[in-house]
Image 1 (cartoon, rainbow over the protein chains, first blue to last red):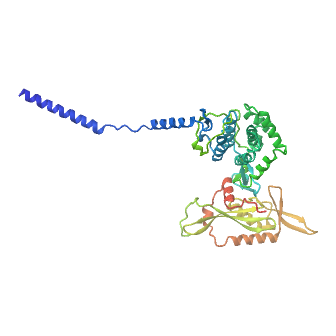
Image 2: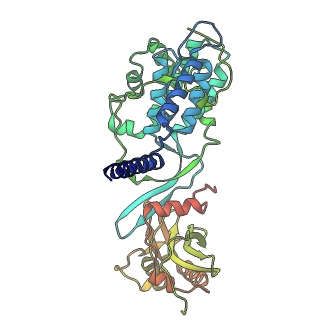
Image 3: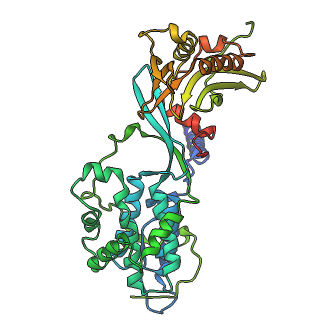
Length: 280
Length: 159
C-alpha cells in the first residue's frame, strides 16, 4: 500500500511540474526586437560608407551640421547648395555662415513694401491706434540675394574671395533691423559684424567689402541691385505698426552654437552629386 | 426675425467700401458675414473711412457721425467729430463743417455734400437687417482689422 501511495504522489508531482512548465512556455514573454540595436547597426553602416572619399583614395572625415539644426527651409536649401556641394568645411567660415543664417531666423524683421496703401486704424474703446500696411520679411530678402549673388560670382572669383563676398552680403543689410537702432544706438553694422567675424582670418577684407557695398562702388554695386530686385517676387505680409517699441532684444555676444557637428548627413540634404573636389 | 441667430465668428468678415464723396475720399466701409448654409448676407459692422483713415470704428460712433451730418448748422460745440466753422470763399461768407485728420489735413464739408452723403448712406443700408449688428456687433482689434484689410485686397496700392 505504501509503495502505491508513493507512486501516486510521484505521479501527481510530475503532473504539477509538467503543467508548470507548460504554463511558462505558453505565457512566456516573447523578447521584442530591440529598436536601439537596429539604429546602432544602421549608423555604423552609414559611418563606414561615408568615411570613404570619392575623389581621393585617402580617408577623409566630413563633418556637417545636422539637418534638424536649420529651422527654415530656405536656409537649409542654401546650406546644401553652397556648403555641401562645394565641400567648404574649413573653419571658421563654416560655423560663421551657419550662425548668421540662424541669427537671421531668430531676429527676423520687416521693411515696408513698395506697393502698399497704409491705413490708419483706430479703436475707440481702448484709445489705441496704428498704421496698417504690407511688409517684406528681411530674412527672405537677404537669403534670396545670397542665392542670386552666389550664382553670379561662383565662376569669377577664387574660393576664398567668394566666401568673403558671401559673408559681406549677409552682414551688409543688418542696419535695416529696427531692433538694432533701438537697442544698440552706438553700434554700426561695421562694429556689429566684427562680433561675428571675431575668429575669421580675412576679417579686414570682409569689412572692406561691406564698406564698398555701402558706398555703391562699381565692383560690388550689383549686390545692391540684386537686393532691390528681390523685392519684386518676395512675399508680402500684413503688419500693424503699433509694436515698434516692443521689439525683442538682440543677444549677440551670447550667441553660440550648442549643437555639435555630425558625421555627414549627406543623403538627408538631397544632394546626390558625387563630390570630387577636395580643396584643402 | 424668426431665425435663430448664432454667435458665429468662423465666417470671415468681408469688407466693402461704398464711396460717399470722391473729392474728399470719404467712404463707408461695411463688414459682412456670409452664411453659406442659408445663403444670406449679414451686416456686422459699419465704419467711416476718410482718406485711408478710420474715423469711426463701431456702429454707435458711425451713426453719431451720420446724425451730425444731418444736423449741419444746427449742431454746436458738443459735436464729437465735426466742427461748425464760418469762412470766406471768393468774397462770400460760407458755413461748413470742419474735420481734422491725424495727418494734419483739414476737410471742409458743405451743406449739399452732407445731404448727398446721408442719402447715399441710406441707400447702402436698404435690404439689410440690423438685428445682427445690434445684438452681435463684432469687436475688432488692431490685428483683426489689418487681416480684414489684407484679405479684401484693400492694402494694395491703387494710385
